[in-house]
Length: 259
Image 1 (spheres, rainbow, N blue to C red):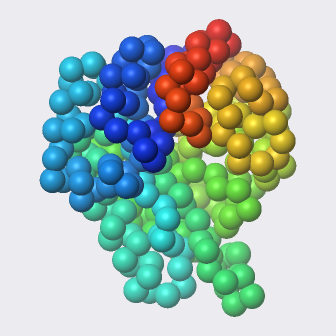
Image 2 (cartoon, one colour):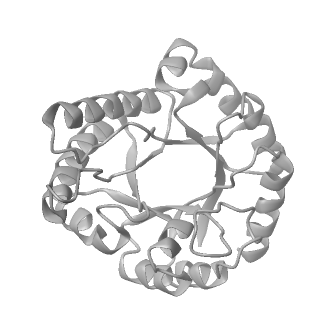
């Protein structure tokens, strides 16, 4: 199994995150394109990312912004605006040398008015548009499973069948939707070529806890066994909701012990 390991930046992390990533032994940083690291901020000062990546030899992935976006809106201007801003983010990510961009491919349309099939149709249309932009930018779009959303992890086959999008599997989100480690392992065996990236989100219960790796009860060993079994190559991002880099470093040590 050939994997590269990184972590998702959190709101409140500054320029030091690259130094800390390198010191801990990470291969990449997955930069959340929001707040101090928004598209506008990076277009103004791209050296904030480019210089430390070059200095430390780190790879870059990005997590596209999601608050206030709806790529599955039935209201054309809302959907068009969401797609336009995400497309601009993807172009900026490509200019910075990002390899992958994690996308929340979901619809927040009002369910009493818009059924699941139509909501997924709208998401599919948006994903296709964003893939066209990403192809030109040299970036791979990885749609993340969002808990209790449309499409849910149980509906991802629509995205696989109707678009060329890759998938980011968030383990905690999967658990919230009734897919445990065994279920994720089955997905790996069924769709190894479409799963490109993981958010390693550890939890104790079916909630979005994002604990330090190993502090929860998800059986990651079972998932990694499946990945090894299919000869998987891809990226793993530890997604830990903390600003304490000690936990970020310890999480990598624990991950490496399982790999």
